Amino acid sequence: MRERQAYHESATLLSKDMVMKFSITALLLAMCAYVTIAPIPGWASDTQRSGWDGTWVGNWANGNGAQIIFAGNELIGLYWRGDYLADTHSAVSPAGVVTITWPSGSATLTRDSETTAHIVIREPGKTDTAFALKRET
Image (cartoon, rainbow, N blue to C red; front, side):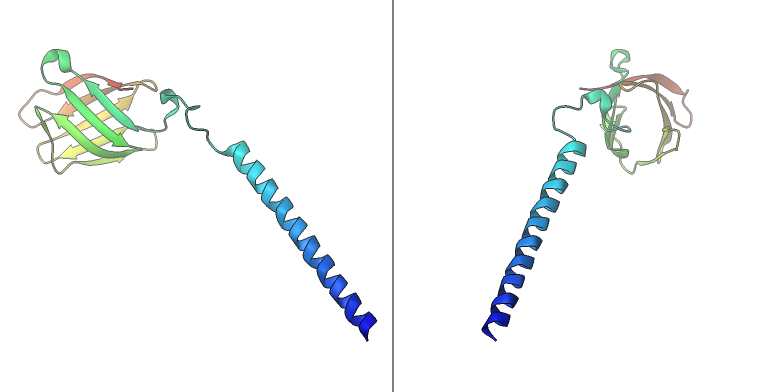
């Protein structure tokens, strides 16, 4: 009986040891995979930002500057005609063109490069306004 109990205890210890080694190996493999594919802070430059993320500015030399602020592709602020506009809504097309609307107008933003774009602003009773935008760094 004692032999059987000793055999059972050694088999249990052996299986626990194997499970522990397997778990450590799996953990190490997962950590290596993460380090291989995870982005490293500071390695990605501003030109590698995806979508519209950031602050885009333009038209300041002409006296009516604009500032358009995005978090990812979500519009979080639009400064135009001396104030931040309320009740703005935006949508990004599959081609990356942004349409912004607000109660008294609309705008279309089109990307020219990673750091440049252009905008056309339409407001009832006014001529369309078009100018270049640059992503601030």
